Length: 560
Ligand code: ATP
Ligand code: MG
Image 1 (cartoon, rainbow, N blue to C red):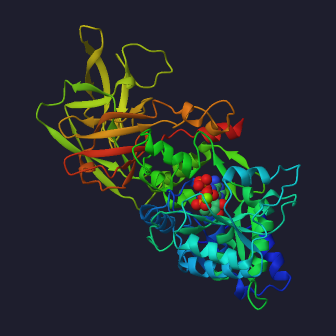
Image 2 (cartoon, rainbow, N blue to C red):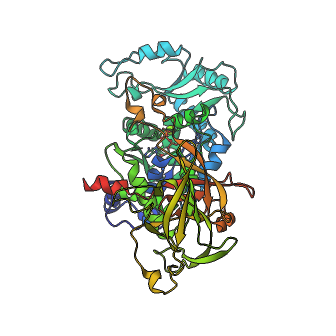
Image 3 (spheres, helix red, strand yellow):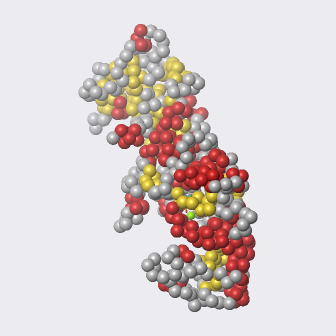
């Protein structure tokens, strides 16, 4: 992925400023630090774009660092999925790192803090500690354990490490300032006891470092120069710096934390915890369900890395939180697929058409252009015969002048084929139209060069030849949530806004060559939208996902 955007975002301005203030360019180093407790989502794409984009702009290394300090929620499956997704987005990391690789170093530093009287073991209940913490407007009070001797602290911390204590009974706290106006500075917890196996360190440790203690020190160990995180960590910056002060060697690069706005997408949630709930409760089938705003879900839905890149590039990096309309993302995929997706014909709600003057048993193969937007896309053959499917909504017995589709006594052109005229129709006992009888004009074949082939009629319909068509399962999607920002309501839970009709499964009839389509192939079903082959497809059964419709609702919004 190339770094093409011209104007600098505010984060890039910060880096430029540092370079002007004689920060050595060769010391620039960045990292993308996901916690492996879920799959990456579209919000992460902004962070990936930011960090890897900086790496490309300054030709600086970018580490992929797994912030894996919570064994209760983290799994190898998530590590693998994250790597797959970053690669698919087109980025290459310098080295793969794990906070868990630093557990020993962090522990050794913690011992130094204890020896210097800057950390102590607290064995009060969490309720007691919470009360002593005070409130934003009221200073906290010191723990009775705050002045334990170094010797006693070392012994207790060692017992924590040896697994002698139950979970929740003992913590190691930094001794900072219980009266600080920043609540996070009021003797924050550095370690807690957890008797859980870690996906990498297994049962080596019974104590696990907290995020604040781990993150900045990991940046320092890796010599990351600029550590970017989202705004909710702004208050953590003071603590980040305090922890660094304890270990910092002046000859080394000192990492600096900077914050940017979290990206939220309308009609969905971008929080791994909430996305996990959708998976666990079966609202969606998996983390890569095509309705999910995860990178894997978007991939399965038919999104391309280019479209996600263009989306993140367009929305940019911001200082303030805001809600991005999902139609902006849809605009980008529609735009990209318009250029690259071959056009094919498929009928999703079939109505049988019989061409009464077309010889029975005969068939012919018509030329069809693959993509008018792409001169190199070539053409293919589509079979034509006496019995066809068209979309039900493309026929009416009677309709006003604005209905440019098929109606009794009138003509339309069949895409890549002939002009047909509806003569009569047949209904079932409930009055539903089940068949239309038409005649075709044998001289009107598209591209045949005859005068009739150039004859203009108002409407053009897509169609398939019934005996040649392949059947496929078609999955149509609607927004996963009925509300624009489902997780911002005080009274209601985001789960209350789940759209019960977000998935509709139907049967479609497609041009026969689609039998050869491979998983992940993307096409435009003419007049219907963009679709791609789902991994559930087998040699017996084709499954297509609808990626996005053809109509550009974003352009409409932008016009207003
Ligand atoms: P979540 O709430 O989804 O778990 P997180 O911030 O806890 O989000 P991490 O795995 O810790 O997820 O995130 C890795 C990086 O991606 C962090 O630097 C984080 O700030 C950034 N990030 C996460 N969500 C977003 C978002 N919606 N927009 C921009 N950046 C994000
Ligand atoms: Mg997190």
